[in-house]
Length: 59
Length: 507
Image 1 (cartoon, rainbow over the protein chains, first blue to last red):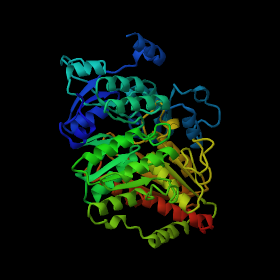
Image 2 (image 1 turned 60 degrees about the horizontal axis):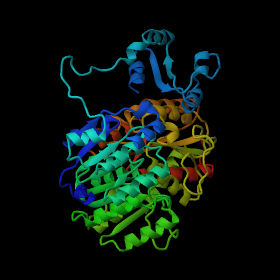
Image 3 (image 1 turned 135 degrees about the vertical axis):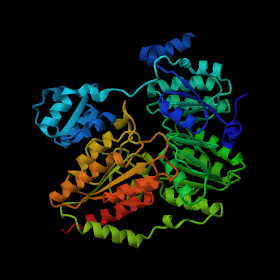
Image 4 (image 1 turned 180 degrees about the vertical axis):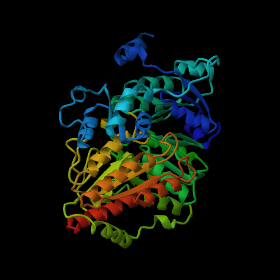
């Protein structure tokens, strides 16, 4: 069961973040005391978005 | 920016810029006198994937910099050798396998990949914050529909800021918790609103970002509605402010109906919506007014700094314009905040003043070339033209420095209007990034018999790491007129524009 937006707005439970992309976004949350999981992201299929979509369909 | 700063700090160097040779940057550099004689073949041949170092200074100092160019690109120290660092997950699915209690994905990958990551996040049951721009309308609509069906929300794309409970996401300012909730389309509208509320002594319960297109009819306000639902259900929220560009026709009706049945007061601030645009949905006309309305709704006093003395504004504008040369006719605004650019246009439009923009309000003319201003013009420096493959101007002032040089050297310009945005992720010293350039353009104008007025506002709070007071003081020390809000700076600029249009420059 996902945490609802109302739960997040109330701050209970405290959100846990997944950061995908620029690290500064996750680091500012971590510095503020929140738990953050950083994804070591790189462009899928060598940066070819169309090929990545085809792969997503196959998998 | 760091490379340029390192070079500019060398003895004998007056200024340095390190920018990619995009069309916009080439024009800006040419406007400042770099490479415009056509003799520099490397510069003439440079393209968007080439880096240009534009350096002004003594010849020997420049030669020395060029000889040691590599050292300016050296990175800072990384993790100490021998220290074991656990590998990070390579996907959202892997992240969830590590931490099944994750609840929000923060996505800032290049736009063409953002929808894919957002789909993965929704599939994993996460709410999504998408900073990335350049996501198609079709993808945005599909993502938001999917989120709604799953009881989730997609904030963005093109969402700069959100506050979830106490957590400030993205370009958030340090504001206290309080009774006022926000639903806002983009980043700087929410930042300006939240900062002014904090400075007025009240606080924010939560802020739901929706993305700049959410209220268009193509999207239908899906995330706005989700935000209103959540804040209505939140016991700590007593009033909800909605800050956005005007909604599409069909969405305006749906929004008006939703607001009418909201159990809590809703202050709508649809920037650029004229009173009378919709009978069903009344809107205040500036973020300052939205703050005052929200404060009144929770029984708080309106602060003195938000009371606008129009007569005093006119007098200040008069004392500036009467020092100007008769050739100086125009106002140029260089905005880091897109919403603040939009608000300034709305303030000019109400005075029937025409202002060109790369992001024009309905009824305002569009700049044919976003890189070249004409007449009075307000430029959103965070627009796609300027940030494609480059950091946002709130993080890196390089583009705005170049454009400031360009505008400041235009003899028809009398007033330059700037905004400075503090907060998490933003530059550690937003005003410091531009101060030397401000001094240069003012000095150069003075040397050629012109008085160049620079007016500004600073969005942020004393609790931000950059310190509101410190930033304001630095600007004032450099002779910049600093106003308490972006709306007030725009009102001052409007008064100056009216005087200049009547031939106010009389030096």
